[in-house]
Image (cartoon, rainbow, N blue to C red):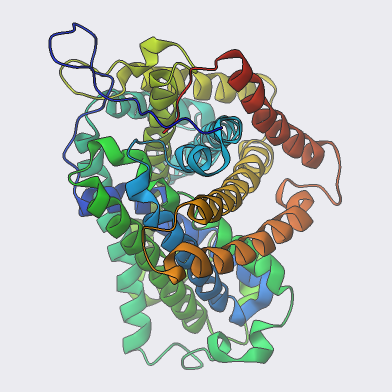
Length: 479
């Protein structure tokens, strides 16, 4: 049974610590944090070339249209339910409200596993990228983990401070990376669409259905991870019942529109007939070489620098998200209460941030000691955990929304309470099936093997821990 009480700030004069975070984030602040987590420049330079090469070629940009549409349908029910879930906690608070405490705790553990795994995994991209950048300018050739450790220290510092400091830094980095890609987009447009004119693949059914469109959708889905975290910052938002829904829709539309436009113009800039071959042979450099073609050597240097800062922004965003999951679970007595005590001066989840950093530090250290390749093994394996975990959470949240509004007839039109969430759930189940089908490729296996099954086992164990903890701690309240 779902409990009805809420965890609130203690009354004045009781001497009990205030277990709520402080902040005054507006719509723009939350959008910057969430969109930075999606790493727009990293997506255009990473998943987009892979989607073109191994997905459906010139038809790949349409995969972003599909993903955006499904996630918007999901968001209709998600945001409609927001005012009935008055505490921060994102997915697990919604799942608890709709499906009960056991499922809510299971969702919390899956979310925590997914976000911590992705934060740690992106260090496997950040370290080598920064190392390569420094060496290209004549700097010392140091192991990737040295640069990862430097980035880790900066993340810990910002995570310890007030969220508004992180928000300001992320805003600057995000604006810079979006600006350079939009500059490339504009250059392609003013050149008449590249060597062959504007690509028609985005509107051509034969191109959209060519190759492996399911694999294309897979890369499109992965590019949106992080958008759903708007509700995590509820306690630090101004007027959260209005701010969170607005930030969710704006983030989705901004991310989806940017990815669709920029991937289409990247294909146009290279040339539709040769883009698959170019993306297959040079997936890691196609963005930089195309930028150099249209914006000169200076543009190429800017892209190389901002790619590194984009990865850092992604790490910092996911660190902020995972810290707040730990904080909220501490506030609900699932984890140590110490995690839920905000910093006296910054009002930040300082202790939860340090705990999240500790877990990530252990994972990165283990990768170094085991001699794992930072990209092919470390990032890929942890990225597989995160990919399956986040889509699974979206599915659970959709089911929770439908279950909640089956009992609760108030709150909006039938479209908002039932129709849109049901359509979103159907799309998300298809996405989950596509990810599971392609999971071996995602983690670098030719077919289902130890790593693929290991990813699924970890997620199953994380979710199964929910009912066990719920039985042992019957007073836990998640919403």
